[in-house]
Every structure is written in structure tokens, then in C-alpha cells.
Image 1: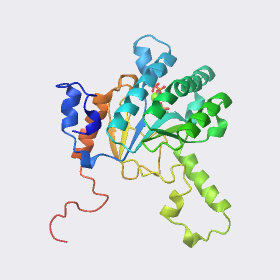
Image 2: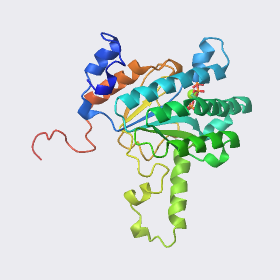
Image 3: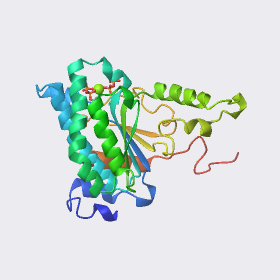
Image 4: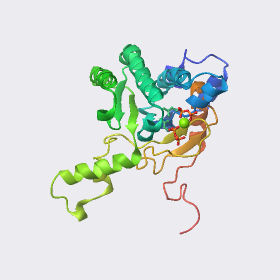
Length: 260
Ligand code: IPE
Ligand code: IPE
Ligand code: MG
């Protein structure tokens, strides 16, 4: 078992049994999560939607720690989409406040665990006080060398692609024949990050909701019915076990079969 999981998982627990099935050499480098179902989780309990978001931040804490211990290099969390501005003003305002509180509390944990915070999405449109906290924690953690937590905030995949094209065009005389995939990737918000190997969506919805459209070309997708506030390390381990059972072919034949 992975060294950093020892003492973290209860001996004989379902989590430990799942972890024992993992091949440490075949872990995903990048896990991306569409954290969905906070509102329905709250609704089932007759609670206001914000309580679902609050409970969801506990899942974030747990998943961050579990991923770091599992040796994941990048964890991308979809926390607020470009389209989420369509929600009632009050819910939107409270979501940003909740993120601010999370950042104020979690900075120590990020430092103690050598984690780095990064964001993707348009930060300029989010409330000033939240942006200040984000900038503070990003600067604080910028020289940490452990797992990167990438928060997708005011993020939309299509917008990111258009912004990247715009940035490239602004560089001056780009000739059409010079446009290529690697060059384009360098202008995306995710420049320098590996593409997600595993994409998880909670709450049972089978859609992408404008998340990482370019980057998930060959990601393995795992969907669970569990609402995000109920998502625990056992679910993450389950996703990883399933991921390792998949055969990633990237269009090729692997292992080679038959004659050409
Ligand atoms: C995910 O939960 C959090 C955000 C999108 C900000 P939702 O708020 O979408 O919860 P449901 O999908 O309505 O249950
Ligand atoms: C996707 O969830 C965005 C985040 C998890 C932040 P939504 O709840 O906004 O997605 P739809 O509206 O169900 O597609
Ligand atoms: Mg939702």
C-alpha cells in the first residue's frame, strides 16, 4: 500500500480494502471533479441550499487530504461555473463567502501539507474580497512542491477556448499554418498541467456542464449517484479502483491484437 495511507485508513475498513487493490504505479496524475448535488442534498433534509454547499466544503477537505496522500499531482475542483451566475443573487453571494471562509481556515492545512493553490476561470468578475483571499493563498503556497489544487472558479470551457484563441492572436503575427494543438494548449488556463486522467461527477448527472472541454479528450469518466456533501474517501478510492481496471487505448490497439 502507498506509504502515506498507513495510519490514515482504519485497519480492516472498506477503505483499506479498496486501497489495497490499488497499484501505486498506475495512479492518475490528474483527477478532476465536478462537485455536484449540494442543493439536492440539502433539499432532501429540508435545509436551505447553502447548507448543502457548506456540507460540501467538508467533502473538499477530505478529498484534498486523500488525494495528497494518494500521490495525485493535480486535483481540479469545479466549484463555480460561468453559468452559475444565473442562480439567485443570494445563493451566489453566499457561495463566494463560503469560499472565502474556506480559504481563511484552510491556508494552514495547505502549508502544512506542502500543497499549492491555483485557479482557472475568470477571477476578475468574482467579488473583490474573495479574490483577495484567493490571491493571498495562491501567493502563500506558490513555492510548495506537493499536490496542486486547481479551483475552477467562474470557469467555462468554451470561454476558456475563446480566451486562449484571443491571447494567441494578440501575440502578433500568427500564421494559420503555425496553429497546432500543443501551441494552443499553452494559451489555456491549464497551461503546464497534465490533462485529467480521471473525471469524476457526483449526483448522477451524465453531462460535462462546460467543464474542461479541451482537456478531457481522453479522460476516463466516472459518475456516482452520491451527492457531493456525502462524497468521502471511500468513494474516491472506489473511483480509483475502477480507473485502474479501464484499458486506456487513446485510439490505438492496446495491448496489440491480431494482425494488421
Ligand atoms: C454543486 O451543487 C455546487 C455548485 C454548482 C456551485 P449544486 O448547487 O449544483 O446542487 P444541485 O445540483 O442543485 O443539487
Ligand atoms: C456544474 O454543476 C458546475 C459545478 C459543479 C460548479 P451545475 O449544477 O451547475 O450543472 P448543471 O446546471 O446541472 O448542468
Ligand atoms: Mg447542480
